[in-house]
Length: 403
Image (cartoon, rainbow, N blue to C red; front, top):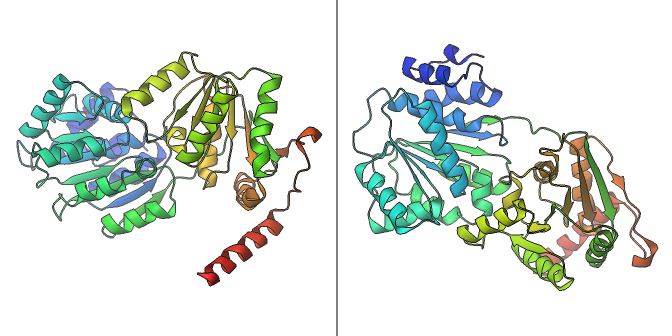
């Protein structure tokens, strides 16, 4: 579909034309008309599908009509990180070139001068505020922003914000909004916690799901079927054969990430961790060091999987199985950037994780090659996902009865 087939104002179409935007992506085609109708929406779409324009364009379109109050905050866009907030701000600047719509990006990790600039933008009532949850909440508590006239509330990368522990912050911000506010949610995955949040803050929403793309065939996907205690020894064996460089190891919990990083440091590997407990400035420092090659191994939670944009990642290791097949796709996709789509992904699968891993294989519609574990590391379990799944269910049900 062409943008000029949508119900967009001429000034918005002029901005698109100046930026050489002609054809919509699928997510834009499906979501822009719904947002323009004023309906609440939850859309499942990955990064790289054009989702930012999917909500920014209808927002600036409606604000350009001159029907919203002057000198008031009319739209809030929530983003999990300052990097994403900055990217959204830049896109708004481009799209609104011919439209008198003002925007301010509000995020942490800045100096006093930037804080004052953000504060002034909020107090004057910028049309659109792009903000990280923690920093916007700080301004709310200090009384430097009034959200009583907000007409649009957008949550971008909602799953990532919840993974980073922003659930309470989001609800506190949401409670400041007027009842008539239109709520727009975008999420790369749709786990139960996202559905719960959607049920809480959305009114009769339209749900749009763009199919999760499969990983490129050029990524070699492999797995080790092993016992949980064998994982660290397999890792050590892998790295003893070739010095690790440009490696990301994913784990599903912050505690495991910290423990694994500490273990690898004791083994004298050049390693750093990345998770939501780190301050913004520290996260940026770690990412910069990893990009520059000063760190060989990055151990991270899924918070990083959807936001990391680094070329030439040679290897991705899933130290444990992600919660959803979509998260698996996000994780291993880090290794196919800027390398002609080629990369290597290795997943460690313990008995309790075999059923989850089988779900990933079913989702991908392929059998992932299982690498034999070297005999020196001991016997390994057979790959019998149905058997281990039954055992796990039996344990869970027995544990429930005892409580």
